[in-house]
Length: 492
Image (cartoon, rainbow, N blue to C red; front, side, top):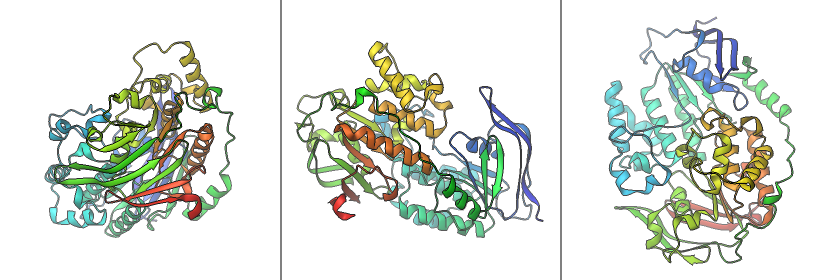
C-alpha cells in the first residue's frame, strides 16, 4: 500500500452550532485522484479548505509531500468564486460597474494579473502558452479583470492553478460557466498534468470527468463514504428522486402586473465595441411577449453583453437602434423603469450581491432591484416574501445570512428574489451553476411552473439536457454575431 498524501483524523467543524464535519477520518494515498461529492451544504468546500489549510480546524490534517517531486510541495485550493481587487486594493465592486469606463481604467488586465502571479510564485512563463491556448484564453489577455464574464473568470482561475501545478490540486466546481468545448479541453489538461505527477481532488456535480478520477468520496451526515466511480454512478442513478412541487403562490399565477402585448425586445443592427474590440456585431433579434428563448454561445461569444443591454445595465444601449417593451431606448425612460419590468439572475449578479443580507431581506429586495433591503416593504410585500420562502423550502433559513448558505440554497433564494415582483421578462443566466443534477431538474421544473402565467423568458444554458421544458426558441451567438435563430420545437 502506497504512502498517504493526506491523512485526516477526528476532524470536527461547526458553523453556528451545526455540525458540518464530525469526527471525520479520511486517507488519500499517492496516485489516488478523488471526486468529492455530496448534497449542497454537506461540507465539501469546508473539507477542501481544511485540507488546503485555509480554515482553522479541530482535529488533525496531515499532508505528506514527495520530497523528490519537481512540483511545488503545496496543496492549492481553487475556490468556486474568483475574487480580485482594483489597482488601489479595493474589492467592493457593484454589478453595473463592469460596464463603466472608469472602473475598467482602475482594474488590472489579465496580462498584468498573470505577470504578477508568475513573478510571485517563480513560474516559468514559457509554460503558460500551452495552458492559455488549450483553454482558448489568448484573446482575453488585454481585457480588464472587471470586464470578464463568470466563465472567463473561471478560466483565469484554472490557468493560474495549472500553471502553478502543485503536488496536490483541489478544484471546487471548476466547470461552472464553461462551455462544452472548454470543459473537454480542461479534462484533457488535467489528465496531462496528473500524468506529470499532480494529485487531484475534484469537487463537481458533472458526469463528464477527467479519466484520471479513480476514487469517489461522498460526504453524508459529516462522514466520508468511499466508493469507486462505477459504484458511485450506479448508486446515483438509483437514488435520484423527483421532488414534488408545491402550488405556485397565488400572486404569481396571473399575468405580470404590467403585462404588455407589444414586442418585448427588438434589436436592429446593434453593435457594441470597447475601443478597437467589437463585442457584438449587427445583432438583429425580436422577442415577443410570452415567448420562451434559449440563449447559447461559447465563452466570450457576447451573451453577457447582450443581456446587459436588455437589463438596462449597458450604457451603449442609447447609441443603438434598440427597442425594449415597445419603446426606443433613450426616449425618456430611466434604468429603474426598465428594471421594474425585468427579473434577472446571473453568475455576475450573484457574485456582486450583498452577501451580508439575510435570505428574507435578499428576497424582498427583488421588489426594489437593490442589493440588500433598505426600507420597510409593508405588510403585503412581507407576506409575499414569506410565501416564497415556503414555496422554495427556505423557511428555516429566513434569518440566515446569504454568505452562510450553501450555494444551492443561495441560488433558490436569488430565484425567489428574481420572480417576487412577477416581472414581464425573466432573464435566467446560467441559473443552475453549482447545483447537482437533482437540484437542477427541480429548479427547471420550478421555472416551468412559474412561466405558465405568460412571463417572457430568456434562459442561458450550455447543455440541452439541463433546460426547462417550456423553452420554444433558440438564438446562438458566435464571436459577437448571430449564428443561428430557430424554433427549438421544430429542431427536436
